[in-house]
Length: 340
Image (cartoon, rainbow, N blue to C red; front, top):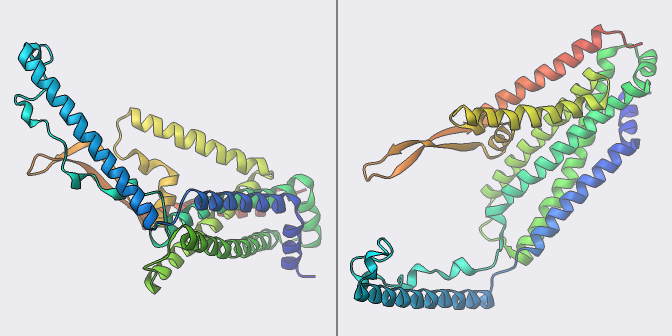
């Protein structure tokens, strides 16, 4: 009997894996439904309503300017402007409403879903949820085998330790790829419907679809990396709690704690020390960090923050190192330790 097919069936029959997958899909569905109901299609009716609201806002500004100008004139006539220094300008005629064109109707339009402009963010959201799901399922898949004694029984049938562990990992990744591709197809179709009914799908070209496909491919890689790290950590600790506890410790201590310490120390670009920043850089290809404490004055006296570009190459190096260390340690430990 094929060990690989056996592990695939074992993965499919695990209740935790099935319920975790259902929960992850429900979360994705909730996001999709939420976006659907918080957006609407822009038509002549919405345009007219926004124009009316812009005109109302302009009239309010006109009335406010008139009231302020009268208050300024009364204060100067009674000599009270000396007591309210800084509130009014030297000449009350300077208090005027803004020009009508400064208040644009588009500011008052309801939220609408532009598929081309917004779908990349939805891919990032999809990846974050599936990466968390992959980490948890990967940890439980091998962790349960260790804690229940199933791994020891399996090694009696197949004594090749590394082959057994890597076959389990291959089955896990195969299952995740299948679930991810199916969910991604439904995710894309769902947001295409949202764009059609609650926004716009205009300006979609072959280049835009290719960009989305590449972003999705990077997301798939990140999901596989997260699942592999969870699998490796649970194998190292022989228990699911090892991976989950390590993840919680890394987030609470290694991320929040490190962020606070670095901020207190006045370090530049604190976000560069946080893992979510690297995940975002991997997905979007580049994240520009800003340090407003370092002011670079321009020729016109404008203050611009110092910037640092964190690219997908930086993220790939970090993820590769973590993946190699975690999986390599799991394989070395599996080969050397007593599994009885």
